[in-house]
Length: 141
Image (cartoon, rainbow, N blue to C red; front, side):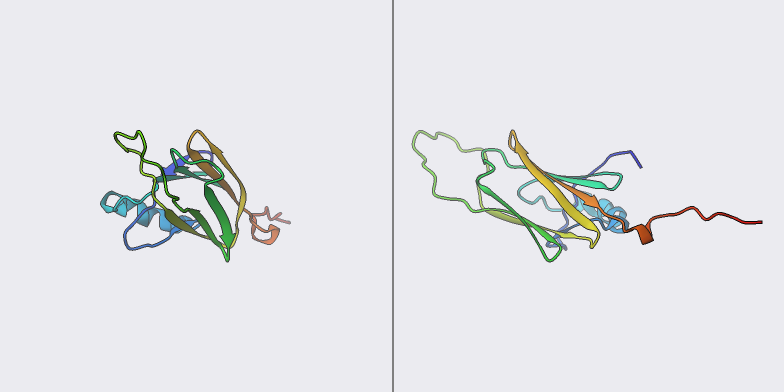
């Protein structure tokens, strides 16, 4: 499975998004067009057993963002501080506080997070135990 799947799995009936629950993807994709956009926007990319969340956070730095995993929930948050409006004629970038949660399947492990050019990337991997991996059964005579 080398094809990349790019999704925005935001839906108004779900307060969280799901990572590693592949059977839900088709249901959520169908409802994607009717979804209400949430802040901040993000992509969920699947490449085999690797998942990447890309979140657009223009104007922030890695020190502004909190990323944590607790009880199979990935939380990404930012708490807005008071900002100076001195010299600002127009403020078009959304710089508001947010708290985004993603429910992780039991076999998903967060590997790393990086922040470059306003894009937060969180890489996760599906870890399949040996006893659940497909195996070849030799047929004897």
